[in-house]
Image 1 (tube, helix red, strand yellow):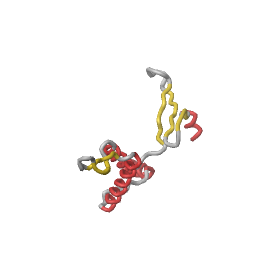
Image 2 (cartoon, rainbow, N blue to C red; image 1 turned 60 degrees about the horizontal axis):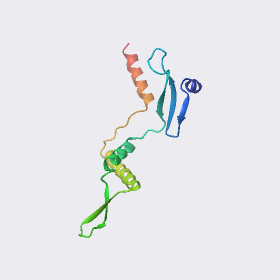
Image 3 (cartoon, one colour; image 1 turned 90 degrees about the horizontal axis):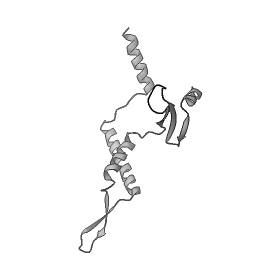
Image 4 (tube, helix red, strand yellow; image 1 turned 120 degrees about the vertical axis):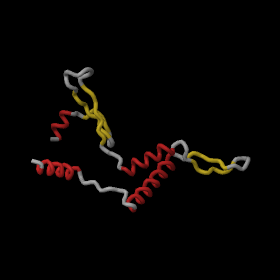
Length: 126
């Protein structure tokens, strides 16, 4: 099966995170006869997605105390990118640990089990 897939959708570029495949368009469609398709090889889980959402929201506002100005007021500096990412990951880890303790995380069966369950329902409705 892999050989057939590789022939039908040749890889034209990529790295360890994503591959770019060539896809033939139907001859009757408008435009070019080929296009590319992006296929992610690594997909963030919910914790990573939550951390990214935190990073997106904090990137321009997250700050650390940085002494005082000449009038005695607190000075702030923006967090460095490394500090920002570390903070987001820590918040994500704590949040998901609490979600688990509260029972807010649901177990989802493997996709194969879901397909089997659908087949069972279809077979029982004959």
